[in-house]
Picture 1 (spheres, rainbow, N blue to C red):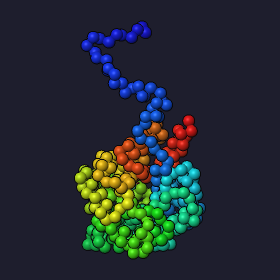
Picture 2 (picture 1 turned 90 degrees about the vertical axis):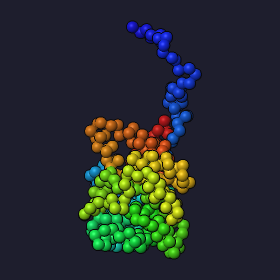
Picture 3 (picture 1 turned 135 degrees about the vertical axis):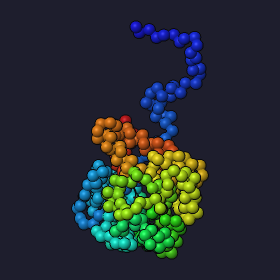
Picture 4 (picture 1 turned 90 degrees about the horizontal axis):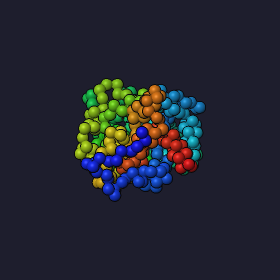
Length: 339
Ligand code: PBG
């Protein structure tokens, strides 16, 4: 009892290399930590609706709600207070049509929120997602011609929406429809309207993913027929993902994004080697929903699991992380820093 056995003669001791030396205390671990998260690199998605003083909870994203403009501004104040880097806005219009005309409506929820947020003058980057799926009756990301999403007919509509968001005060527009040529279409239209200083964050490699489920519930944007595999990427293809990024770079993207995040870590690693643009990852709704559901059952520790996931995304190469956990993570990081 209490006796530690001497190593058997045939068991080798490690020699001088002992990585555990630097894991011995919290201070040492902190000193040698190779990836550090900062609230400034986190971007919070916000869903904006019409009306006033409305907060309509999203069941599959605990703690999140569809917010009227005034409530979204209130939320943005909290995020700025926490040091979060920015917000990305999604609009949920009162009505939809076949062509998704609401996406470019200057009176729509996103331009209204952008104007109000600009007015609030917070130290937050204001990004706006550019897509038609929240605005079309059929829920697809482009217009339908002969039963299929028509790429080239969709481009001018996306460009028009991006210009409307730039006009309303967006710093960044993020085309997420996976239409070929969408970055070039946006860049040309923005420049023609005098918005050459508005940046494009390209959803460059966006997979047709099962992990967007809760988002589609939140945005009411599930396709009414078929699926998105005719335009979003096959998640099995890594080299094609890099090709998508390459094309977006050539078309004038300022930031490259991969999505979902945890299923694309290999793409981040490869993208960081190949491109010099800032890289973003979208930690999507389903990724957070899994974590929330498991934490609710007591199967995972929410905070530890969330910080581990976010750190892995940054370690893999993302400098920007779009995440529904932005506020909580910023709070935890500040608490940890104060220790
Ligand atoms: C719009 C869009 C989607 C997401 C971001 N932009 C939904 C989709 O493509 O179906 C998903 C984000 C998330 O799941 O958090 N095209």
